[in-house]
Length: 414
Image (cartoon, rainbow, N blue to C red; front, side, top):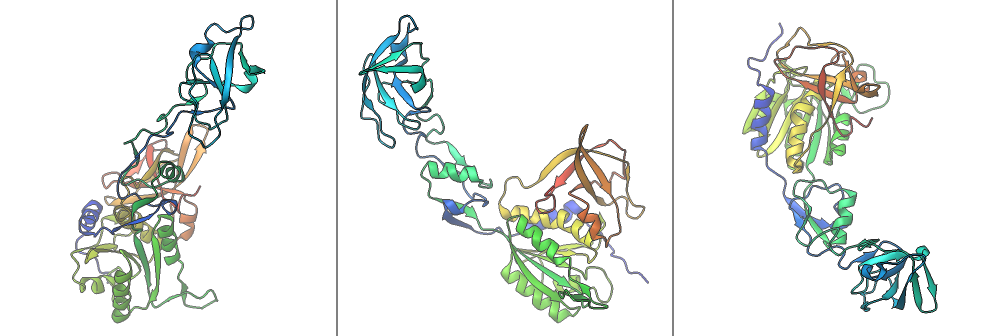
């Protein structure tokens, strides 16, 4: 006799309950040069104008533009050279009428100058600079404060700090940044049949699914914790879960989520007095998945078959990681057109569906080929580089339909 779960929770209900009960990791302050890839926990503002002084874009001569008015080949202007501005020095010179000073790329402009004329466009005769054309005010000048004004937000809370953001922070003399601690994600594989051995093991099954989720945790900027394998024994599973909840913010469990005698995940988790426990989710495949929150720590109970486990990860685990990361925007999508018709499976057509896609550039734009395969098929996933989430109410899509393809770091390198 096949046992069934009596109640299935809609995906939105299950994940919203879990997200509300999760405890956010604390923030920490790190040196700016170590902040790359981290999520800003606060908005930082520039305490200065950048550049502090107007600077030259070119090797040449700083002048006042009005002193070049009327200059031509026939009637050049002759300006008096009064010195040079060394790189890295504050400008000590002040230009008066019909004066010029030598500058290098990156030199500050002397007081009074508003333009730079390129070295190759003028001629030097003795102590005079011969200018044969009019120069527009601001030519080859990076004005003070043109890049960043004092008080401007240079990094906003919830944004991932990119390489260029690190440069910006250093440029405005911000040496330390408050960031969210990286979420810690533990992965536990359950099942007496599993082994980590690479040798031929007869009836034993290699633990190939846990590495998938450890890798995805790495790709999402988390600290991944491998809890190994727990056999199908209540005491062993409980020990591993308790250990995982001590070490991590989220625990991903694979296997043991159904309702057979050897399916112990739900039974063990329920005895930990979870604040939230939803076992049985309206998604296909993976309806025997579950989500729980124990003392502010999240647990995602994922089925043993890889497709159901992956569905549970993208619909339940991924949003939980997104919240704990502190990121303002965590989802990445692209619009694509289906290359062929897609139809829901006959079983559970009114559940939320995850469709795996091969997204590629076609002559007519971005195309997405919907893939199908057995729930145990790893090759279905290796052939995919994106996925679509199909609502409960949709059971079929025509070829050419516009869909939202989700791109998942670690899954969507293509």
